[in-house]
Length: 351
Image 1 (cartoon, rainbow, N blue to C red):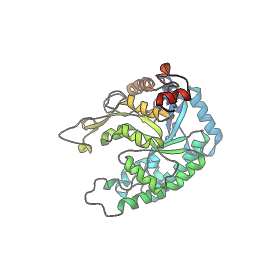
Image 2 (image 1 turned 180 degrees about the vertical axis):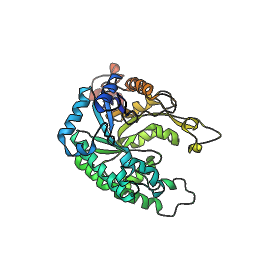
Image 3 (image 1 turned 30 degrees about the vertical axis):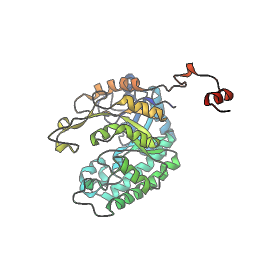
Image 4 (image 1 turned 90 degrees about the vertical axis):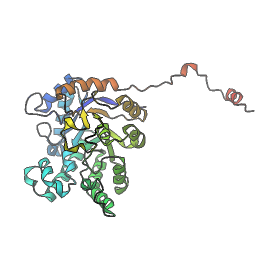
């Protein structure tokens, strides 16, 4: 068995204009002071990282690694969650998702998609230059508005939607394959890839592309009422990244998994700081260790109640306590006996 690395922290929710969250050296020193060993870096925020420069310059990437290493940390993955979302956007969401795009492509869906694809291609090169093996992203969505089948979906719509999604992602997946980096899709409501069934459809549409992998985040499965432990049993071979995020679902007579348009505090399903929700992380870390996952355990902090800095501080200790050092012995070795073929025959009653 291999060992999970950690604790690490996704920086996206903490970046700001005030120190220590305003640049990469400061935020890395802050993370290290809390006990983190790794950082997952959002690639679209130039206060921390210049993706275009990273794709073009090994010297720049070496300087980024040096900054992170000087703080006693490693880079776990780059993230293109926002750019990945823009690879596939249904027109109903154009205006809202324009917020993720630079001004020069806002209001221009085709130009925005082209920009997003170029961002992912640069992320492949940057990840390779940084010596990374996994990349975190979203798939985007062409079908999400049809998620609940009313009116009934036309025959062939889902298949055609995944064919188009695969068409957009295959050049990106090929670029990551050339770079030796896995593309880890965070399965998330609002994305066409939001559970195991949709991930399987995507795999089929991409001819089981070897770089199409999973970022496992159990919090999104709690909100969908999906068995997050059985998911590991089914898909462990494709899990190449891990967000440690807690959640809870409190059944209600007023609203369900769709949330009733309530704000986050009033929803039956809501994200919580680590240890404040319902997720059995002891079982998750055990299963991932059992199946040989040796990637990073990365805190993604989202909570509608607790302050983010409190969540970050508590999260480092929480993850550290759940890391498992794999055994190199069997617990009953003390009662064992040396191999003896003749003795085994006698025990089995074989002449």
